Image 1 (spheres, one colour):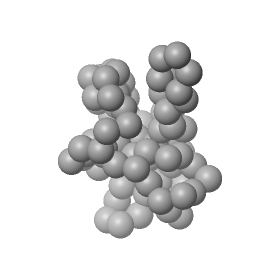
Image 2: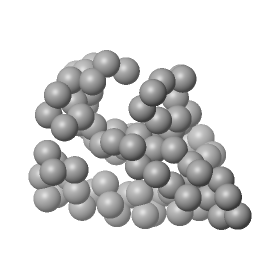
Image 3: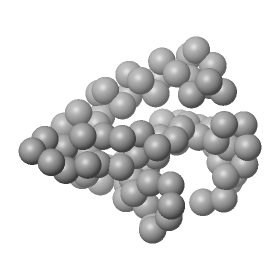
Amino acid sequence: MEFLTARQRSIVLDSVDEQLTTEPMVATRNRKPMRPNPLATWELRLGNLQVYYDVEEDLEPRIRVAAVGVKRGNQVYIGGERYPL
């Protein structure tokens, strides 16, 4: 998250807390399961920001954020570098 601006970090943290604390594995308009890939199993879209996460199911589901990307056009940049999804 060091490549994000302070505003972007705030958006990500607030949205993850708000949208993923209950039913993180339910698809919505901005949350969807991804096709098999090495990065993560779920994607949360926040405008031009993409949060890629996995859900670890034990007694209580836990969220593991794998990466946060910035979408420019149809390309996603994670950590300042283009990531092929």
